Structure formats: structure tokens, C-alpha cells
Amino acid sequence: MTTLAHAKMLFENGAIRGATVSPAPMESGWILQVSLASGRDVVLEKARGGMRVYRKADAAIAAAKEIGIRSLSVKIE
Image (cartoon, rainbow, N blue to C red; front, top):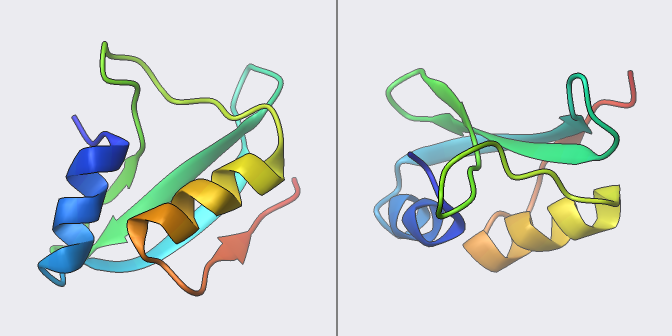
């Protein structure tokens, strides 16, 4: 499980190499997906489990900034 707190720790250890904000599948909202140095892509999750869906793309971008990410991709479809 990759929560916001866990993603911050991964970033501080150099384990995140990129991020993408994209529309949430089957839901209204946006998700934040991070690409790990190991080659895996993971979607941020809520602390109690389940995909973290942000109501606006700006909120997902703000979460990426909080992690420490300074550059990301945005998919609109």
C-alpha cells in the first residue's frame, strides 16, 4: 500500500522517478500514480485502503508537490 506518507518516504530515499495525474477509472475524479525506481507504477491509496481519488486535478497535483515531486505528467483522457 502506498499512502501519501509512504510516498514521501520513498521520495526522500530516491525511490520515485516520476508521477502522473490522470482521470480515475470508473469514477469521477483524479488519481496520482507514481513511478518507482524499481520499474513499478503504483497509485496512491487511502490509509484505510482503496484508491485515493481526488475531486480535482489541482488537488492531485498538490499532493504530488507535498510528496516533493516537482515535475509530473497529466493525462486528460
